[in-house]
Length: 200
Image 1 (spheres, rainbow, N blue to C red):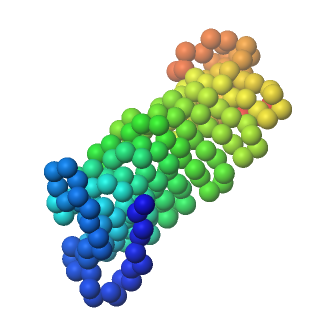
Image 2 (cartoon, rainbow, N blue to C red):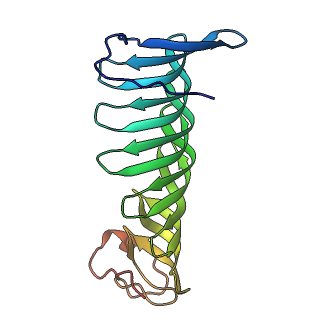
């Protein structure tokens, strides 16, 4: 079990590359538990290999962001949790080469959750779960309902339609609010006038 040692920013024992706390042997190399203070102001504590973050550890960034999870050759890789200070947002999921990649969940301060498969940092299809237990399944862009999808309210009412930046273009078999046709081809996405509001 990995035990993180307490660290103070004024601890002069921790040099630029940090202070070794303990180590253990792998098949080819020695992996060590280090505390590293970077020139950028970030502080890392966890497993290292060849003076790089490698294995499990935690990095506290200068701006207050915190990443706790796995590293591969000094990059976020595998399962990890990233806490964004400014946005008060938390990402739980997989990483590849420092980028969100694979199944993940975004948690927002208002209680909204977005989950699905991230590809190179972006989620384009997934599920948005709201605090009132309503949920949307479908196309997503910039963390918003955008494209074709299904909105299911907590009372069971369901809308299957095209969405534009969290707004509804038309409800089920009703006509599009802009072009007044039942089979909108999506061209109305860029025409904001007349877009339906998302309500039952």
